[in-house]
Image (cartoon, rainbow, N blue to C red; front, side, top):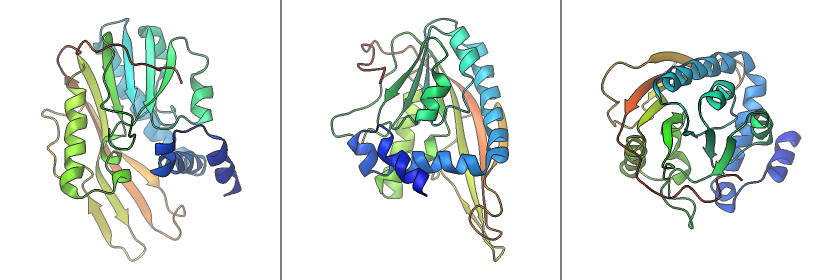
Length: 250
């Protein structure tokens, strides 16, 4: 606990990320990874494999944008850095471990952005750089509405806006939970749809797997949290000719 408190104090984060709890979530995510490394590494390996498949379908050069870069452990930074001129890692908070992981790869930069477009009073919708070849939404979609504290209707709007954003890139890879399972100690299993009824992309996913988010013992007793994850490759249109993002490197 003391380690997490210290990290919260020392990790650079904008005020809106602190107030909304996103800094706390980032610190907690890293702490849970340390405790559940075996289960999470299996999930991260599947994510990396899917991203490499998607990158192989994209034109070389230009920029690849990772939305929801998190701890960067699920991102194949080496192959992406070799294939694209620039790799932009976008998230509300960039932990020091994520910065260290990406430090040795040329062309990798960090961008701090509110991807819900609702928490940062001076922010706005995200725009892809004009030279974007591939966009990746990484374990992000179902998480976007959570810090907002909004009802299901408004939460669905946030999800739909994110899917529309991905269609603005020439090619995108969507990796997302499609089912949350909470198995409690009494044997009752609660099933939740993180998409809140929003339709999944058409066609078969590239891959699907189960992520044991909290194995037995993590939450006390026999309670477990498991997410069903799927990945899709989506074709979009040409990137709108917005200026390159200001302050990409943070």
